[in-house]
Image (tube, rainbow, N blue to C red; front, top):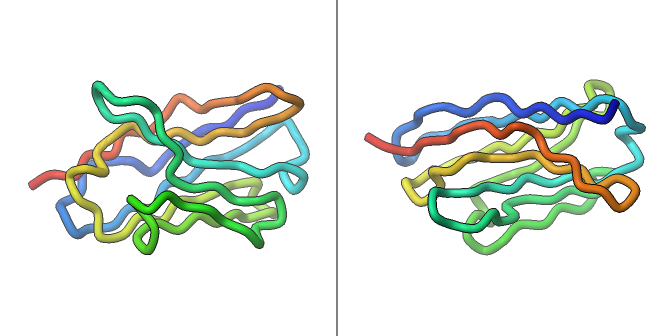
Length: 116
């Protein structure tokens, strides 16, 4: 059974950092690209980071470039999102996504709140 499970969210002050994790099971982890999305209240879900199956290539929108870093651990079948210099506009539910055989698999999401 294909499953992705996020963790690591929480409350952080502006300028702070968090690292999110996404544990993947039920498929050949090393064969597939994965990505992180976020959705803020009243807004559409948006891509914040993507990584190829090898981990060699990553992609970020301008809004997070230079602050967020996506990585993956083949041994642990886990991807990570290191988020630095967070600001209140980063407040959202963060989701991990896998596209496998033309189907998208989403986790349940993890809440990130940036506030004093």
